[in-house]
Image (tube, rainbow, N blue to C red; front, side, top):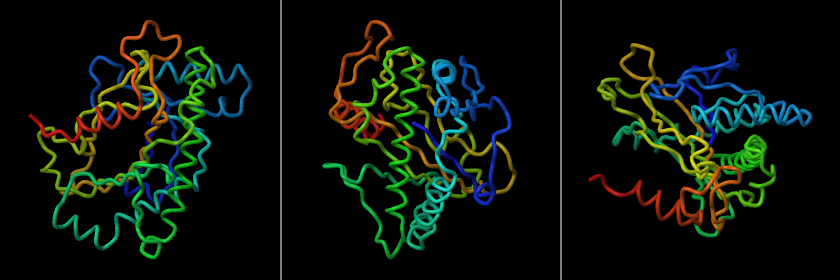
Amino acid sequence: MFTLRRSARQASQATRMQFTRRGLTTPSGAVNDLLPIISFKGFLQGNEADKKEVSRQVVEGFKGVGFIYLADHGIPPEAISNAFAQVSQIYSKEEVMALRASSPDAKESMEIGRDDAPTWKNMWPKEEECPDFKNTMNAFFQTCHTFQLQLLRSIATGLEFDPAYFDERCNIGDHNLRLLYYPPIDRRLLEGGQSRAGSHSDYEALHRSNDVIRSTVHRVVQPPTGTAPLTPARQSIAFFSNPNMDTVVSAMPNTGTPKYPAVKTEDYIVRVRLMESLRPPG
């Protein structure tokens, strides 16, 4: 999974990473609480030595903290800005705001998959109500799909197996593009450790790595700064890179004796993880 985030203040500002490492939003316990910021330019444009060095850094980050910041990833800034503009359009619709007022929530989201999926169909708003939303998000979905294949190749390179290993396993586009909006909320509702998204780990293409790559438990909490009664609004776009639904997932090469049985992607995502998330507590 990779995530793009934007706060209300950042919506009208261009931001640039200036530091080499950044902190986690919540304490991480035994793991190093600093996230490495890695320039991906060397992998996209460099020679073989450059590719290997970037890949080493990527894998080192995923083995350690389980998260990294990628700079110079090659996704055009205008593509990101257009996607966020479309997210703003959706969550500022009068009917959405009315629903928010009558039934407030700490987190709102919309899921987008590949538009030609045979089973899990996208549900699009009408074009006249959200002009160019469908075209923009489909294009951004494809941009993210293309990028995730490059990222997977760098991981394969860093783990010293065939860089094309993931190509035929993750090439169809059975991913999830999640459009998230965290509306302003009374800070008192988030006191006492209340999260906007509870503790969880992810389960996409990389998380059957035989425990070589860390699947770090994480959550979304209230902004750590500010004293205003309401938290600031926040937008986030998360892309979950999944193997093809018909792929049988087993331990990756060079990760030792398999610790877990092989499983078909669709069986694991739909029948195991999704059903777990829908099961009532207790």
